[in-house]
Length: 99
Image (cartoon, rainbow, N blue to C red):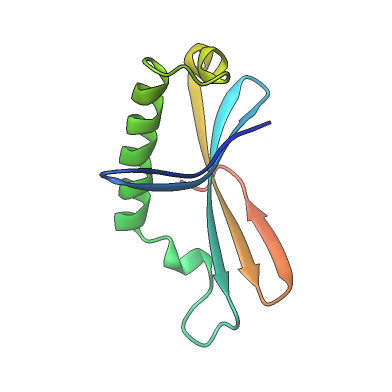
């Protein structure tokens, strides 16, 4: 179940946040027309991963004071998984638990 899309805070943006099997799944979406400048997965550098992790911490903190209908569900989750959705042209590859 998707609980947020393009969620923004001072420390970054989360493309997709979902709940799946009592786990919070944060999915970074990277799209490229070709591999000429690297693959979509290569664009998720260690610096980008840190930014996503920090934004996730802010997202979770915001759910503790939110009136969002999903807040109570998000607040019960203990596990977070980070995925990357790689779009290359018209092809989609999902990399689960990648960082």
